[in-house]
Picture 1 (cartoon, helix red, strand yellow):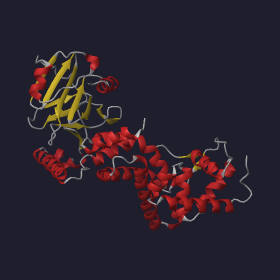
Picture 2 (cartoon, chains in turn yellow, green; picture 1 turned 90 degrees about the vertical axis):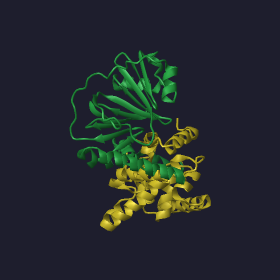
Picture 3 (cartoon, helix red, strand yellow; picture 1 turned 135 degrees about the horizontal axis):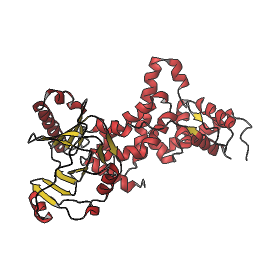
Picture 4 (tube, one colour; picture 1 turned 180 degrees about the vertical axis):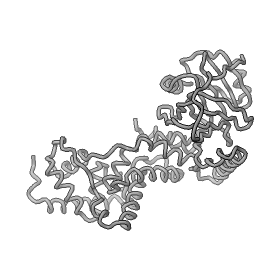
Length: 182
Length: 218
């Protein structure tokens, strides 16, 4: 349904002046865009961030390579917009900024990992230095693959790998003896 | 379970509020007049289009002009929000002409696309760049989108994005203004969409049927 060939066709139609076709891309990716904005710390500004990101993506569509995947390219814009929003909020109120990243609600009914353990993991991810937090958020919390993570964060793939490796080490240290093999 | 899988589980179980209902419409209305094309010739065309729309706006009545910035561009149709509108509309005008589709295509300069489900139309009319057909109570117009809008639709509520087409559904009666001829009539609920540089307006059926007909057009 979201095959890239099919999306390349939509992009071509939008570029050809059929601006209403852009609605298809918005509908397809709105949900993952919002998820990304929330996970990266947009908080109450997530809806504004998402709307702004889609408008900016439309403007930048001329520079989008048709062979590229639309989703990571869009999420990179969402990530940049989120950073801007967090910064603006930081100027308004520093305390809010500290509370903002990863301000997510965990579904208690989801029992694959206990709620307590998930809360602990969120706290540990939140305590990571920014770049490690970003790479763990994209790669695992948002479940993007390594290539997508590299595009979203705008880093070389090697950097994604090494930062992930270090971040996981930190998390293991912060969560001693609790990672049991189940 | 590995730490990586535990983190994935955290991601999956995180509750993220649903996306704003109005997101798609809001984005589309903001990007409607923004050019995405980068070639200089295309930029010039986009500028010219914007300029002509502006000229059309200047020629219109002041309340229309005041909201030019809010216009949504769907091919050759400009949708413009107004405070109040008509509450009822007569049925769409029946197309009286009886041209053959081939002759109409020749006059219009493009091949019409018709909803397969409706069969042969009872009336066909065409002029350069424009074609109208009708069946019992149903009217379909199609016209080359061009740079200037052909119609202005003054709607006062209920403009919804229809992703299946994709297009827009005007759910309430609204003023229909033909830009070049100043003809005004009240149109009922209408589906508007654009495909390959041709704008389509379908009136006389409800939303569900309109979407069915539009997606089954060839």
